[in-house]
Image (tube, rainbow, N blue to C red; front, side, top):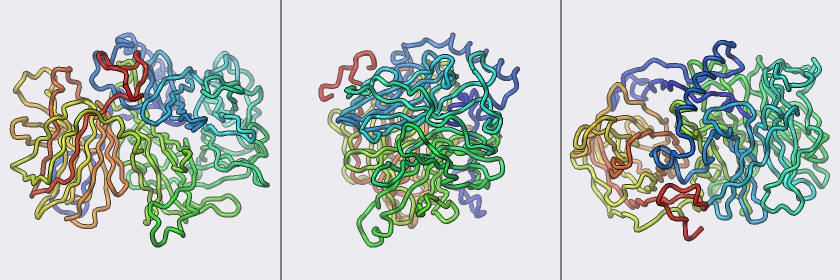
Amino acid sequence: MLQSSLIRTPSIVGHRALPTRAQLLGHRSVFKVAPRPVRSVSKIWADMTSPEVAELKAEQQTDVQRASLGDSWKSDPDKPWYHIMPRQGWLNDPNGPIFYKGQCHVFYQHVQGGSAWDWKIVWAHASSSDLVHWRHEPMALQPTPGGLDGQGCWSGNTMLDENGVPTILYTMVRQRGHPECGALPPQIVDLGLEMIEAQGCAQARTGDDNLVEWTKRDEPAIAHAPEGKPLTGFRDPFIIQRGGQGKPWRLIIGSGTKEHGGTILLYESDVPTHGWQFKGELTIGKTRPIGSHDLGVMWECPFFVPVHPLTAGPGAASQQDTYVLCVSPYPHHLKDRPTNTCIYWTGSMDADARFSVEQASGPHLLDLGDIVYAPTVCQDPAGRQIMWTWLQELRKGGAFDYAGCIGIPRILTLRPDGRLHQAPAEEVLALREGTPTTLPDVHVTPDKPQRISGVHAPSAHLQLTLEPGPGCSAAGVVLRPWLMPGSEAGSQSTAAVLLVNWAESRLEVVYPTDFDPASLAFTISDSTRRTGGAIDLNSKSSSIQLSIFVDHSVVEVFTDAGDVLATRVYRGADRAQQESAFSIVAQGGSVNVKELRASKMGTIWQQKQDLPEGTAIPTNA
């Protein structure tokens, strides 16, 4: 499990107004955005008083009663349909993705029957033969009443053991003070936290090629935290080395100390199911922030894997043994900070299985947006490192019958500068439907934007190249405008706009903006929030290639340099208002648009009960 699995979806989401590069340097900014106060982002049950907990639980119960469970395909235009998510209920961390017998299996944290985080979380399961079309499978792991996982089967890892048997290692959770908690750990290993954590193990039934039947081992793989360590958490196991041929199995666990902050614990064993021995720390972090981002009191959901160079050119040989360490920081103070910033380092592991974050490249932000947390990774049969992310909601939890989805699978490679290059798995493009809209080279000016006709669907993919002309400060894509609630046809619309900001070297989504559907002009107001961050643009004339995935409320943007921005845009419009097109806009000067292709995207689901009303089962599934 991870920090965010303890975080309640915020009832009010506040966003800090990001300082622009121009503001930092004392220059005039392209966009004027009024600063806004930071509001409470989220709360952690364990950090709250009993009255606060009771109040929030009562509020959630009211929300759940108000929700129309199970029918949101017909009533909610913001629900994604080509991202993995449960039929209904809460989703957080993706867990233990694995390729086995020609199938990709992705597990994830899930609360059944409610759309807010709660105890007794389970491992849900989806499978695919092509990374394109998916099926829901039976729950893989569920809490055992009175057991060490009686209050939740939290996050973990899946691998094949020494005999090729699919094996899950996961965090078992009991809740201190719960009637079924059982005996407390010995004082020397008791961390004193509300959640009492141990690491459990489960294995697939022999002959079960679909991985739908799992048996938990009677004894935990790791019964308690190391002795005498003042840790702030003990969860989310991840295998970093397979054993055999004289090598031990190696495992890391997310943790932290009050003195140093995030810490990654290291264990070794002769077999993956039991016998794990504590071998110290893979690395010890620091509490200093990265910019405005907190590096956390502990690090959740760590993964540590080798990454291949992006290209085979000069210098690639020196990167062959490079690893990426990615963590999800559990913040010190949640009330005034964003809680979804994932960070990573790239560097080498020494002969003693240690990784120095001081000597590595980083810390770097994994994503420029505001919804990615708890990523994990697996290797496919072709050797690609594929990363899976949790895309959070930015609206009130409990008032809808679902919350959260898993992002488009990302292929990880290493850039020459030591940063990660993230690209969408090319298989996802097989979801493009119908005849695409293509445009020859188009010259767009501030007073002559370009409408992209032919693609009006709420789920779409766009790819294009932007080449700024003289004076162009920013250009981008208007992401399907819509009418404000209560507006009548022909009245003022609103829109989200994806912008490449050459003046500030930023990629960002600005939303909501006042939008004129006739002129395609948009205006940023005091209520507009900016989500994004710095990207490498060699000059103010640098072109950029964009691959844009829009799935109802989900927006994921990939650049050719390997940067990614994921966010949510809630339109809240009814179906009749969704027939609106994308368009290209420019500010300050002209932009040349090249190689534009826009397509409708189909659904990933193969089962009728998972499809939106009136949607046919994919014929190529």
